Amino acid sequence: MLAYTYLEKGRFALINKEKPALLDAEDAIVRVTLASICTSDLHIKHGSVPRARPGVTVGHELVGVVESVGPAVHAVRPGERVAVNVETFCGKCYFCKHGYVNNCSHPEGGWALGCRIDGGQAEYVRVPLANQGLTPIPQGVSDEQALFVGDLLATGYWAARIAQIERGETVLIIGAGPTGLCTLQCARLHAPGRIIVCEKDAARRAFVEAHYPGVLTVPPEGLAEFVRDHSEHGGADRVFEVAGTEETFRLAWACARPNAVVVIVAMYDEPQVLPLPSMYGKNLVFKTGGVDGCDCAAILRLIAEGKLDATPLITHTYPLRDIDAAYELFEGRRDGVVKVAVRCSD
Ligand SMILES: NC(=O)c1ccc[n+]([C@@H]2O[C@H](COP(=O)([O-])OP(=O)(O)OC[C@H]3O[C@@H](n4cnc5c(N)ncnc54)[C@H](O)[C@@H]3O)[C@@H](O)[C@H]2O)c1
Ligand SMILES: [Zn+2]
Ligand SMILES: [Zn+2]
Image 1: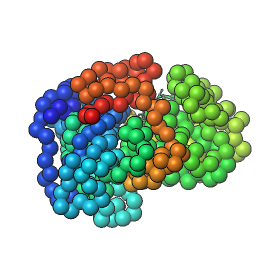
Image 2 (image 1 turned 90 degrees about the vertical axis):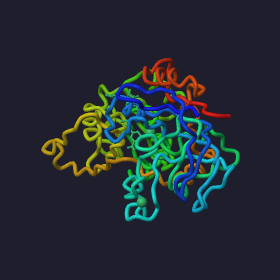
Image 3 (image 1 turned 135 degrees about the horizontal axis):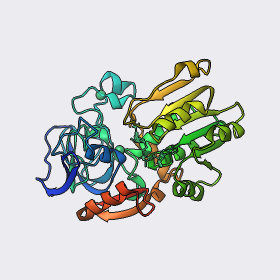
């Protein structure tokens, strides 16, 4: 079968590999129908994910059809359409029991798929711990609608949950890439009074204005004043940093009101500095980390009810055989791309 593979730093290639087989009682084999490319795949390509294993099939954002299951898999059946979770987790360890599945202590727990073990930019994928890692897609929900459930929507849902948004509050989202856009949709579920999106790219600001009427957009220049003018208590009540630069890290805490919650969703290439003397007295709460992707069933229900829809993010679709071109487009941010869907099988 065809599998897009991390060969060495700077080089991915579509190569032929053996179709995966069940290795463990809790495994499932999934025929991948639709996969996507994530910014984290680019981090692997550039060699900035030390855990990523050369030779691994990449891809951790996908949907498909269950082909076969091990004897201990009861949550899904062959033939069922499923959303695949970015994280594999045991459901039994201390961290899983507390919902912190990103820190699952199982050897194949956490973000393994498409990083340490073969992922889903391929015709088939083996998913370990399948009772937790696969979620049936409700009838009436398309592959496109479910594509981001396991990764980007899970991230937005998790970020909005840990921010503890209260009705009527002012939410600031910095960065309107695909992750910021999913965070925006999930934040809206908590009925904030106002959402401000800060994005430096004019085309991305225009995308927000076109798809999410009522959301205020602003470039980073003058952001602090804008937020002060559009909030009741001198700054945003909840801030999401979803851009990942030194400037946006600083803006995130600078634009927060005293006692706000600042959720750091972004991953940084460099360490960031918390200038505690300048923040003294602001009494901020910082929350950081990798997504705890354990809400996929709830997210799929919201999609089925029409309350979440990330399909406008799919701006381009390619067949698996043209995945090099899909990467080139996504990486080069050409042609207004937000997300690329890759059709891996019919
Ligand atoms: N915590 C998690 O589990 C998790 C999950 C998914 C993604 N992420 C991280 O979230 C971040 C965003 O991911 P993405 O896929 O949306 O990436 P992206 O690069 O497409 O989005 C970042 C956006 O920030 C904007 N930006 C950059 N500098 C800015 C500035 N100074 N002011 C305003 N906007 C600015 C960019 O124009 C871009 O639109 C990445 O760091 C990614 O690694 C984290
Ligand atoms: Zn990802
Ligand atoms: Zn666990």
